[in-house]
Amino acid sequence: MRPPLSWIVGIARFLYDFIVGDDWTMAAAVAVGLILSAVLNVNHLAAWWLIPVIVVVMLGISLKRASRKAR
Amino acid sequence: MTGLWAVLLTTFLASAVEAIEMVTIVVGVGATRGWRSTLIGAASGFGVLAVVVIVLGAALSRVPIGPLRLVVGALLLTFGLQWFRKGIMRVAARGLAGIGGQDPHEAAEWTGPGMDWTAWFLAFKGVVLEGLEVAFIVVTFGAGANHFLGAVVGGVGAVVVVGGLGLILHRSVRRIPRSLLQLIVGILLSTFGSFWAIEGLGIEWPGGDAAIPGLLVLYVVTAATYITLERNRALGLRPAA
Image (cartoon, rainbow over all chains, first blue to last red; front, side, top):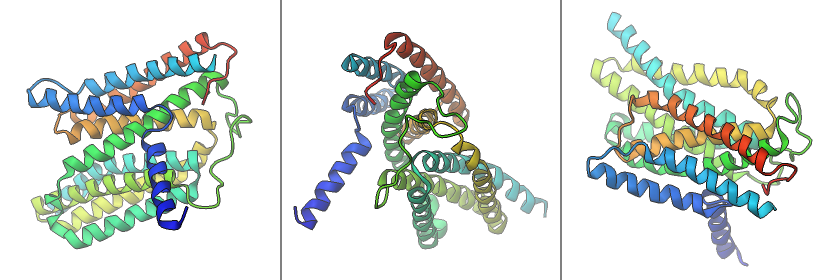
């Protein structure tokens, strides 16, 4: 690959590895959680608790999936 | 004179809170990924910050901090969760192997030929966001009390003092096993990421900044619980890290 294209591919790969990493479902859950938090906030409902709950739940799901794969 | 000292002390204390967050990220990332790229990232952050402060000056208070907090918070949270998860798996599998020295299971820190862009990016973001918050505090307090000099000395003094403490403590941080360090930094990044992302959406945390230690306790308890569960579940199996 020639420089301009290889740089773009390199940057895209870095950004994917950096932001999404091994488990894309956790990044997706954070994105959905932030959207839902915004929706709750717009409707004047308490929204601060949602992201911590998503963190705790998604970690459990991701860890369970990883140990199932390891078996 | 009393007004000057009051502004200096208030700005120092308020800026110290932000500086602690900045230094925690830089020291954690440096100890985990290596110092060269982390320090270049932090220096780049200070460079950008200096340009922004010089160009905008007092108009800085009009920069929308909310969207910036949301973007940086969401990025820190998604990245922090990766280290949080890997840290749990590694500590569950290896315990505290290597405490006070090198973990025999862990590869050495980044030794690649070029820049470790992950370390650079994390340090850069931490310095720019927290540095901007210190600059906002200085501008707001300085303008509010009409004592810009006191506010600048307070803000810069806080960054220098907290940065110096980080420099002193970084040797102790190096003695922590890398698996445990990855877990600790993952928890810290997830904590600050959760806090900033939600704040960036304009949502208020109960207790304001006091929610940060609350989040930290929740995530530490979560890590301890999952480490215990992982040990029971995958007894004798190495996790796919």
